Structures are given as structure tokens and as C-alpha cells.
Image 1 (cartoon, rainbow, N blue to C red):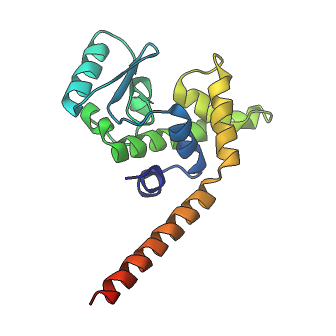
Image 2 (cartoon, rainbow, N blue to C red; image 1 turned 180 degrees about the vertical axis):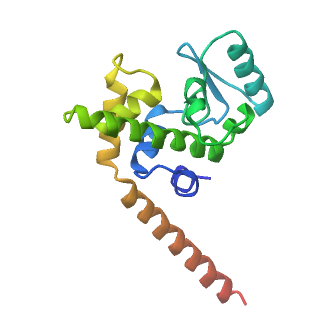
Amino acid sequence: MDLVTLILACSLYADNSIPYAMLQTSQISNPRTITVANQRKTFKTDAAAAAYAQQQLDEGNSVNIGLLQLSSRQLKKASLPVKLIELLRPCRNVVVATDIMNHLQLACQAAAEYNPELDVQACMIDNYLGNFQTDASYTEQVLGYAEDHPFSAIAAKALSSTEDHNLSTLANHDNHH
């Protein structure tokens, strides 16, 4: 499944430009990617990735899991309980990650009531990544990508090309019968 389809099918976040930008800027293409202490490891099987992640959690380490590098520290904010191995499935990773983004967005909106200068999207991304007040460069990169590549336009183009392909396939099919 391509990234546009993944976001369309699985994202719960209101502004799909943000999770799409996070996927594009993270340069993670393997859903079995686990990051511990800024060290990324990619595994060939879900079982191996889940075992490594569980071992790190058992040792007291925070782990980031899957395509959207969902932090184990954020899992308690998820609306539904989730098993570690499920987070290695791209759609489930996006569903849980964007559910958590929604919770963080609400918290940042509440904080913005007391601090009107707060950038709510940047606040959500910083809190999601767990790098609040440490490194704003990635947050700026995500926001810049989202602004330069509005998801609605990307999705419309992808859907249009899919429809064109489907019509072309049907036309070819009809010509052969």
C-alpha cells in the first residue's frame, strides 16, 4: 500500500498533511523499524522486531515503533489497548499514532488558551516525538513539508491517477473481448 492510500485508509488525524509529512520526512520505509536511544534497527520479521522492542522495554528503555515511530511513552494515551506486535502493521501503527496525535492536539489547544502564541501543530508534533524543548528542527521540517505538500492535493492527484488507470484497464479489457 502506498503512503497516500495508507493515510487515507488509516489516519484518524484531522489534518492528514501532518502524519503524511512525518512519514515522508522520517525516511523510514520499513514498518519493522525500532528505535532505542536514537539507534534505529530494522528487522526482517514482526516477531524479531517485537521481541527486540519488548526486551528494550523490559530493560526500562523507551522505544519508538514502526512507520510513525510511535513512542512507547505515548501508548497510554491511546483510546484502545494495543499489543506491541500490532504496531508493526502499517495501518495499525497509523491508527494508533494518529489517535494519540488527536489527544495531544486537544492538550495543545487547551495550553494555547493560556498562551495564544503557542503553535498548536508544533506543540502536538513536539509532544508526539517526545522532544519538547530539545530539537525543533525536525518539527519545523515536518511543518514545512506539510505546508509545501498539502495532503488534499496529493490525495486528489493520487485518486485521479488511480481512476485514470482503472478506466484505461477497463478500456483495454473491453477491447480484448
